[in-house]
Image 1: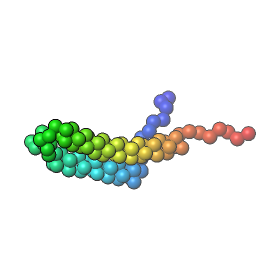
Image 2: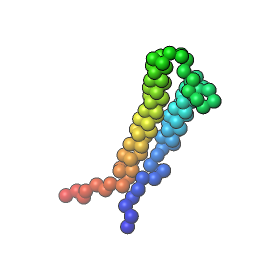
Image 3: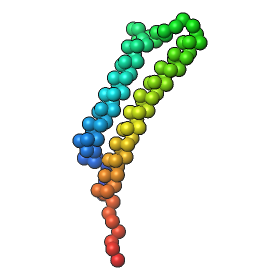
Image 4: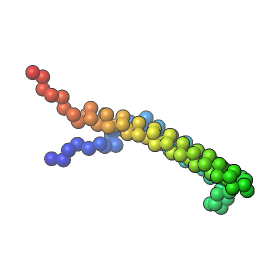
Length: 97
């Protein structure tokens, strides 16, 4: 017999809505950053000074990382809730004495 597995039913409609909102927010932020910092798929620094370019690149990468981390953190929380529901559904209570 196969052990029970997490299924789509362990995720609520609210979980899916929240997940999609997290991804919409993240991709909108990435798109905004791309429009602000790239031309034809190439990074376009605002300054010609190499030190300012390094600082700008660091700030941009920090912003991208923050957007990814926020989405990932939210999705992990949703997944943890679904796994708790899965365990509640599948773990049997020991018989009472």
